[in-house]
Each structure stands twice: as C-alpha cells, then as structure tokens.
Length: 188
Image (tube, rainbow, N blue to C red):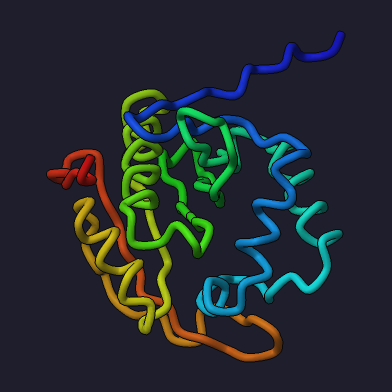
C-alpha cells in the first residue's frame, strides 16, 4: 500500500504566500537562476537554458520533506512566483537543516527575502521542532550576511574551500540560529 502524500504546507505573511512549486513557476525561477549577478554566490552555476530551470522546478515539486523542502515565494495578492526559500541537508533526528533562498533580482531591496526567510524559520522551529538552522554564505555576499544577522543568526566561522562551483573552490561563512537564540524580525 502506497504511503499517503503529506500536503505541502502553505505559510502566509502580509505580503507573501509560501506554497508548493508548480510547473508554471519555471519562468520565474529561470529569471533568478539565469541572472549572473543573483547567482554569483550560489552553489551551482548560472542556468543558460530554460530546461535547466525546468528540471530544478520539477525537483522542487518532488521534494522529500525529511531531507529537503522548497517553497515558491509568491505575492499574496496574485500568487505569482517571485523566488524561493528552502531547507535542505535535513538531519531530522539531529533536528537541524541548512537553509537557502533566492528572490527575483527585480524585487531585491524590498524586504521580500527577509520576510520569506523569517516565515520559513518560524515554520521550521514551531512546526517541525527543529533546534538548529544553518546558512552557508559566501564571505563577499554582504546582503545575505546582513539578512541572516538581522534574523538572529550568528556567524560561527569561515570554512575554507567549502564548496566547488564550476571547477573553482570557494569559502563560505557558516551562520547558525538555534531555537533557544533570540530571533530578529523581518520588517513588515
């Protein structure tokens, strides 16, 4: 007998709706993944073909919640996808995951990433009962470092040659937020 599908959680904020990805979100995610500036700190190379983003969205739809979960970040009023938040590298027994996020470059500096990430943090701590959330951030990615620090994450150090992207090694800063830490808030 097949296991019943667990419904994908929907998380709402005043401006956003975090929901399951759909195939029609591919074009929005391709805008993110094909933008060289937005992708310069990511853990994979820029998507040069829409089919690469299509494969990624299919992976986001068919996620395994105990290991990773992806939410489309959609505008509350229109349900139009403008980015993504996720947890991955899930270690549910150890009650820890790593988080990631990306927002359409046209929507940068509007507080959208902070609002979406804060909502996902609440879900991870309050609904999943996680204890530790981690973020690995390139040392030069000041905007992302400021975002997680504003939400209460603490820098735990630099990991040398932590990731290999496009044949090049790169360092990452390791940030963490514990369930027992004071949390910052995203501006509404």
